[in-house]
Image (cartoon, rainbow, N blue to C red; front, side):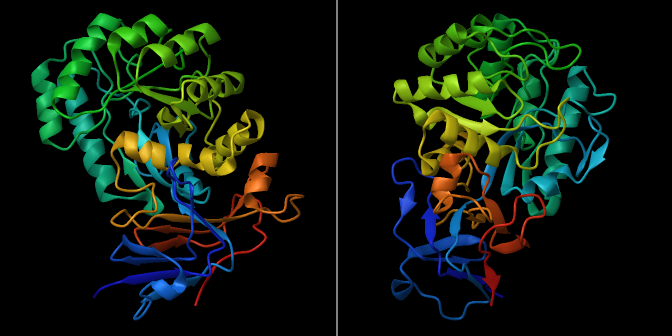
Length: 387
């Protein structure tokens, strides 16, 4: 049976695209989990809907993407001995997560065959089990010495598409990492490199020279995870390569703002993507992406609709995902947002520019309702309703 979702009476549609962050639309239609059309109600085919949502004038944005997480097994993290952290993040508007390595796996294998086996296992498990509906792109091997090109070929053949954070394993030198990054790229595997001071026992400082020599696709937590590089090195990284500029919640906020400003100065804000780097020593952050959006907008003097692009369309394009943008053919992943109750702002965009976290009223993943009013955000002034 065809499942048709109609969302009507939307007050504001955020597209996730920097080139046109606000759409002239009040209606979105999706069929079988894919966006079919959007625009004004009178111009959309809303007949025969199996699910209809009255947005009651709230904002609809693409589901948020967390570009940097460290999952292990299902919704459990041994780092904090906590369950439910992914589901809680969904209540913060996150519908997609990208693994930067299952580094906290108890007894994590460090021999090449074990690395390959764990990567394939994690990729299979998270593909088969979307926690709370959240699409976790898992299976990101931590690079270890002794790995050869054949290991990367085998992983790619089995669906592995990501490398874990380079520098968390025994491969730390730039020239050694470069060889493996090139092998990964040859087989369509995207790479991320740790940046800054050590985050866990066994990791170490990764400075600009190592990052540039390794040539990874994403500069992982350019603002540190947790300890940041000095600002002159952050500027150098932004200027001397074209890699993604990943800013995370668990990093240095001063450096986060600095990196974003350099990207704007270079006219390259499309490189800015957001993550949490959780679970980590500072815990898990269900509202981490929303907090980053509000922080970058309010303290970084960025329009809120642009800051939301950092957490949606920018990441989707850089990570080659089928979500993150309100476009025909994209996954029907949406977060319904409104200004928090009693916010002094006039609307949601003004409230985010003021620094307030918006309230989440509903989350939809692949065209299906994943949650109603969030249990974690402040209560939204208005909430959508299934009718």
